[in-house]
Length: 393
Image 1 (cartoon, rainbow, N blue to C red):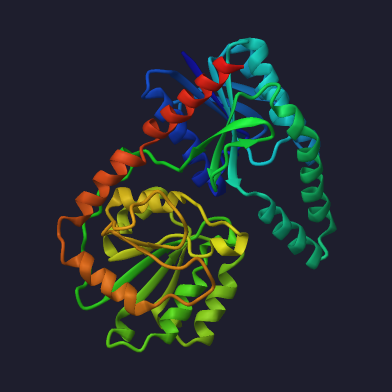
Image 2 (tube, helix red, strand yellow):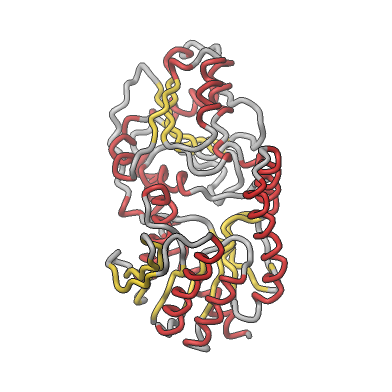
C-alpha cells in the first residue's frame, strides 16, 4: 500500500514547524505498514521524500515566476508524481478548496481509480480567518495582499462544488462538522511523533515559577492575557513569576511594548526563534507552559494546537483556553475562559504548586500523549474513514 502526502510547504527554516507536521503524519502512516512519501518545495523544485526523510526525486521548475504561475508549476509537478506513483491514498494539505487541490486529486484518481483521496481543512470554521486577513490588508492599504486573499476566496467558491467529484473525505481540524462541500468529514486533532520528544528532566527553582510560551505564525497565541494577568496579580509570589516567550511573529513587538507599559518587562523575556532540539533542551527549566489563549480573536473555539501536544509529550503541565479532547479533570492542565480577560495568575500559581506536589505527574502526562496524540493513531482514523467513504461512492 502506497501513501502520498501532497504538500507545497517550503523546506526553508521559517516553515520548519509546518513541515514537521507533514513529516510526522507521513511517518505515522508508515508505521501502519504503508510505503509512505511526502512532497515539499525545495529551492526551485518540488521534492519527493520518503518517510525516512530521504530524497527520492526532484522536479525542478523555473525560478523567479509570479506567485500564480509558480503555484501552477508546483501543482503540475505534484500532479505528475501523484499520477505516476499510482498511490492507494493521497492526502492533500490545504484550507480552502482550490483548483490546485482539485487537479492533484484528479491526477491521483487517474493514476489509481481506487485511490482514497483526502483533503485537509486545516482550520474550521475558516471564514473568520479570511475576514481578519482581508480587514487587516484593507486597513493597511495593502491592496496586493487584499486582492490575493479575495482571489483565494473566489477560487474556493468556484472549486468547492467540484471537490466531491474527486475527493473521498475531508480531514477537518476545528469545530465539529459532518459534511462540507457535500463531502463527509473526519474530525481530527493534531498529533506528534511521541518518540521525537523526550520527557523533560525538571531542574526548576522551587523559589520561583517559570512559565514558557511558544508563539506560532498567527495572532491566536493571546499571550497579552498572561502579561496583563501578571500586572494585576498582587499575591506573595508577584516578583517570583517569570514568563519566557519563544518564537517570532508580527505581534511580538506590541507585546514587548505592552509588558513595558505594565511594568512587568523585567519578568517577561523574549527568547526569539528556537529549533525543536533547542526547545527540548530548555523544557525542563519550566514549571508549566502556555498553549493558545487567543482563539476567540479568530472565532475559534475547538482547537488542538501542536504546542499543547508537545508540552504533553514532554511532561510539562500547561494552561489553555479552547475546547479540546482533553479530559476536564486532567491534573496536568488548567483550562481558562476563551476570551480577552487577563489570566488569573493566582490560579496559575495554585496549579503549579499542585503539579509540583506529584513527582509522577510528568510520566502520567507523557503516557496520555502516547495513548492519544501519536500520529499513527490519528492517521489510522482518517485512512479508515476515507476507506469507508471511498467504498460508499
